[in-house]
Length: 163
Image 1 (cartoon, rainbow, N blue to C red):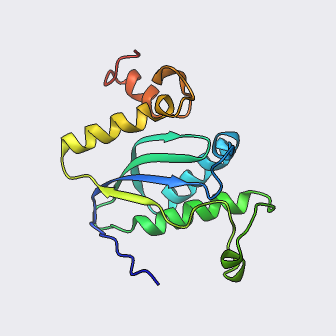
Image 2: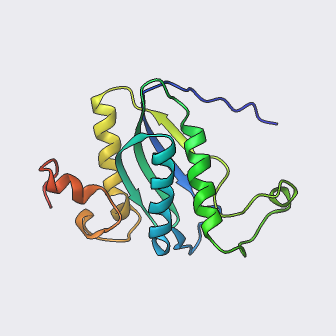
């Protein structure tokens, strides 16, 4: 078994990528965006954190979170979020034999990608990456055209121009 280790730094800021298990032609996250938003709220009520930036794509999402001072457990937050979203969904997805043995659902990839952001330049680069992602994947031609993104909030705040 893989010896998988993560750094848990209380109050730190992280960039995450989280994928659905079945990504090909899967639009679940945008089709069920209200359930995903409810899952985010559910977790924030129980374990506060700040969502600095987010983009929800059909089959994966990227976000930047800043954790509460004294709390570095982002894995537990992702476990709560994925679980809350999954329980709101009807069963019926393909479940691998290894997931079946563990009585797991098959909506999300088990792991997620996490990167500790170390300075303002790193933060800014990941912020731009998040907001550019729908264009990169060919869903829209302009960042402003993707509705499931914190980009619009940053335009309202004068941080990004609309174009």
